[in-house]
Length: 249
Image (cartoon, helix red, strand yellow):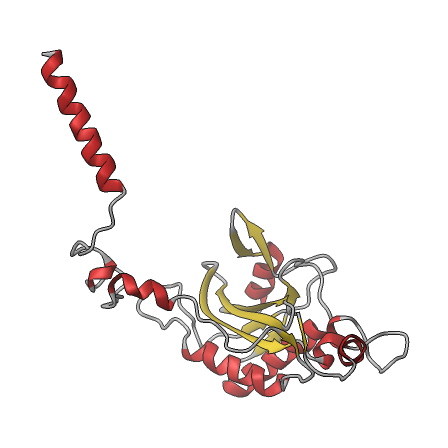
């Protein structure tokens, strides 16, 4: 019996191993590549070629810009996108309730939730102003005690802190608008989220970037006035290139 059973098991193991390392040219009907609608009501008809469309390359070189964004209009556009894509009420509690007030907090550094800069403070106020202009409900600034932050990392997730939930309860707020920024070589990426207070669920999110120009550079580094002792982005570029324009990294 052993002589018959042993080679059968070996063959089954070889077949399983081969199958694991073979790409199916024609996906199964239950796979998203086949164009079948998933549980999330989403599908693609492009097959494996859809993977080629994930990364979008920028056609310009990574350089330090000598221009800045219009923060006010940019934040206005960001809020328009945020509200337009907010999760609607479909009979579930973890939606964005536009009838309730929204709290907002200062935009913080993604790498350090307890610190911010002049840039972060300016962005958060611009976002709050745009939110106020978009709808009639109350927009309330959330002032936390020193060392407190509106969102805290916990087991890979970002949840509202206890104090933020208490403040939201005091004002009967439905959501808290939180925002973070990340500084890159030539840009600053900003992420804005609306978090449902009762369920700690992200009900709206948008992400955009602004160029790391001389004004943004100065705001990030606490430079309020032109100074000979503190290099601005433009003066630094001129020293490294000799012409004040777009230094490649």
